[in-house]
Image (cartoon, rainbow, N blue to C red; front, side, top):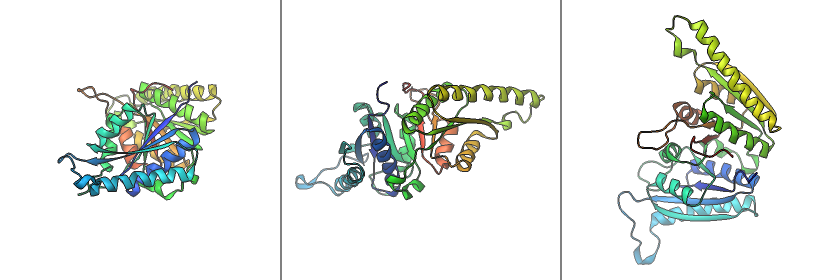
Length: 297
């Protein structure tokens, strides 16, 4: 099998949120031996920047400082990492996505919160747009993860939510490959969402059918994990899917959630499923989001 992750892209705007994404991206690169690409995008939607006397503009200088800060973190953590930096001008999420495509990046690691307001080097909402349009797995890291040192980043407990869909199946493949690579334990959970049939004339029959579907979905993950030699446990829970995932992750001390993104828009771009979006917004741990368009590892 070819190496699962050979290159990781870390976008940064020098915010604390971006630093959280950088720490996890660096930790993942160190564990996998992947090359690190650090990029900062100067938002020029109001017009291109014109440097004076061939010197960097203040915004470009800020962006350069941002990528160098992350590059220094990476090199200080692991001197064997191959690290490259770049500053680009453009619409941030498009530039990030295009860079990932151009360089055949395997994973984008970025914080879920960044700068807002008048600054023109952006991340925050950019993460959502990257998640909605990227054909590359995205490691979405919440600001709370910035509190951890890179050495303390753990991949010991991975949660793979499943709904039996094709998107969940692709995410499961990635999650199990990651677990095999990291020596992680896999948890899987299926949510029986009873709110979907609150007005049904046969709630008992529907509940049984959903539980049977959940048993099949969980058993599929179990079999795949056991075949790979990965320790696995699975359960079926009742409640809205995003609530079930978030509660399980908190109660079991999960380090990373691995889940798929779902669906397609009318203009041919993948969009972020509502469950995944709610989990990314609410999770205290990083979420490894696998688009349905990505190839199985």
